[in-house]
Image (cartoon, rainbow, N blue to C red; front, top):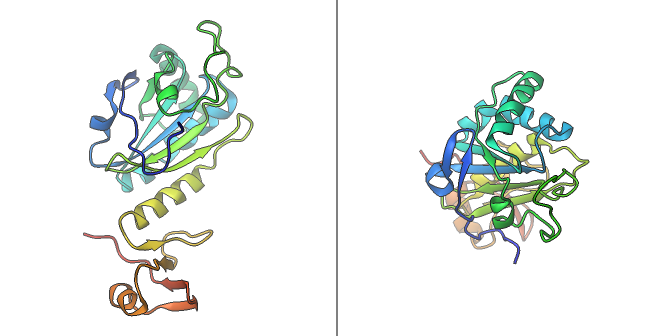
Length: 221
């Protein structure tokens, strides 16, 4: 069965460029993003890892750890990091997991099917469905998933925006409208009546009886 939003993110132990990772322990009280790739030394993936390296300060500001997954060895990852850093112009300090066994790919249902995957001579075409993003909360629950084909590079500005939306709404009776960015108004949940919503979030901008906007609440201290 596929992993669903609010499922507990599978825990795993794996070798990585940062040593042995025990995922839940490594994540600790932070948000986390897993982004996976079908192979090292592939063109689209190199641009994506470069983008993640450039965004490291933004993820840190959001108390979010990022971790890459690729189906090659740590030794290959270390060599590939030199290309990533040369292209991205920033150090690739985040861990990259050795998933040559496909343990993580299978645990996170990243593969459309696995019975046909060769043990030797595997190419990106064999593992092309390993192109996913998981945003995971401090409670170790899956908050959001995205999947991409091999030909479409991920938009990490959107991933960052989605992370902001997840963090803003996590455990709070609000949601974000289409195209929302931080600082814009949010939608108040229907679990609150107008009086309750006003008391908690301030004046409402009522567009429709079921569509009520309020200022984005400040995060708890």
